[in-house]
Image 1 (cartoon, rainbow over the protein chains, first blue to last red):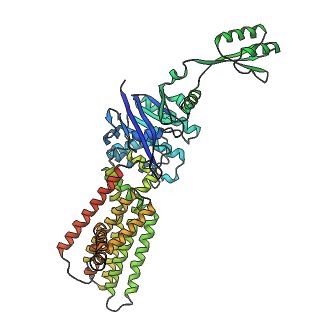
Image 2 (image 1 turned 180 degrees about the horizontal axis):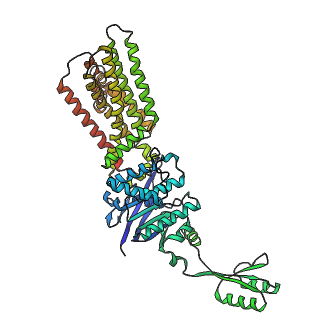
Image 3 (image 1 turned 90 degrees about the horizontal axis):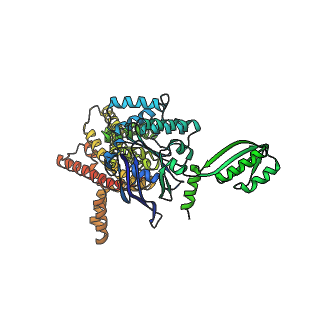
Length: 311
Length: 254
């Protein structure tokens, strides 16, 4: 597989306060993202996600280490020619109209007028911004700004798209549209690297994820490998449970047995106990409504990683 | 092309800002009012119109240079609009030069309007054209370009309030640079004299661009002096811009 992002020992130190105290916000980071992937860069607020993305787009300069994007060194300005970037909560010149902003971005990529016209028209259509295109940005809603931000990130037909919190502040419809667009971009053969703390989006979209906590990369891998390695527990739902069965299930269950509206929910730690519980239930004449293995969700994994890293 | 794109955008920002029009309206009002004032003098009408007109144009031009200049870079970083620009394949130098050229274009239009108004009023009052006024306005414009570069330089590392104070200080001292030099040479003690002379050398000598009174009173102007002033102005601007670039290159946009 062809690497699109190769980060080697990239780190960033900020100096803060009157005494210019040094704070290492990103510990030396090693990470490779391959062509055609959707890579989710996860982490709690303040983990260093945005710092990494700003390093990759040249907004801040690394303290140490290097990175190659699409085979070219980060420090070269020409590297950015095939990269699209959507900043977090994008801020644009509010005195411009949407169309003018896209035109400005196209000019910064050195695109010729006919190419710009054609791209702007198709991107306005893709992001459903045709109607608002000639309104000043000060009159845009947050969702519209985010959509325009995506459009400007795609004006150069990029091979690599870097998105900083693309779903933040969007309503459910907006988030779905953003997800659909990201998948659409992947289908066109582009590589997408995006940061987020909204885990459900990651579960739906990402091929691989990296989890960043306190400026350190804790875990990188395929989502299915991270999440489906083992069954955490098995949940069984029953109806018409006689009191004797209820008493018998108690010792088998992991934690307590839940009762609600005539139904009973038992969580069992392994298959052996499940078989035992099933046999007892069938013998006592209870109805088994469902048996469902519970795998670790990304959320649980995430919380475990974050708690493990936080002293 | 990239520098031009940034310049056009900067010009557009100023052109869509109401503040610019308020300053311009006020300046035009003042220049117009000079006609009334001229009516109070006898035989000196056209001189007063031209003198006041040029002074007003220079003063309001400086207002625009300072108050738009101090926000040129700072505002981009503060409002995070710089993220979208710097993440594109553009050198930071190009961005900075584009911002500068954009504001200089804005000044060119506003000062141009004011200068044409002064020339027209002068013609209405005394009945003949004085193209020398345009030359005077041109040199004044060069001084404003220096002020803009000073504001841009401060804008790369300082807040607008501090930048405004510094730039205004440079503007005032620069306009009085002849007096500063005189003070250093004649009145100050030996140690103080050297210090004041150092200030005279560092602060741009804006007084040398003020040729309005010579033009208005028909005094001779030496082409060599004018050429020297032009070279001095352009050199000073380049130096300021390079300094601004050196600072801006290393800035993190946090």
